[in-house]
Image 1: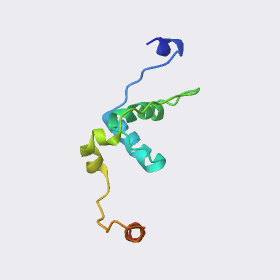
Image 2: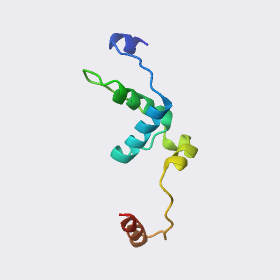
Image 3: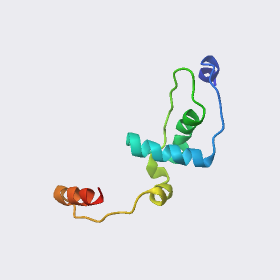
Length: 94
């Protein structure tokens, strides 16, 4: 609480949909696999753009909530566990 007060921080509300949008954005654009609750700070940043410097702390790994990850991910593409098979599977998608 002392750091919050000293930094003149703010607390703002975001919706579950905004959190899930930030969750997906972090994965797609930054390669960060966090749990949805960790994406709340980024959702707040996107919904309420600040004037100054901001630090968003993401503490929860995406595997803390595997159901959300699986429900929002693209379908799984099976392939053999070698680099050529992975490359072929990825290239088929694009």
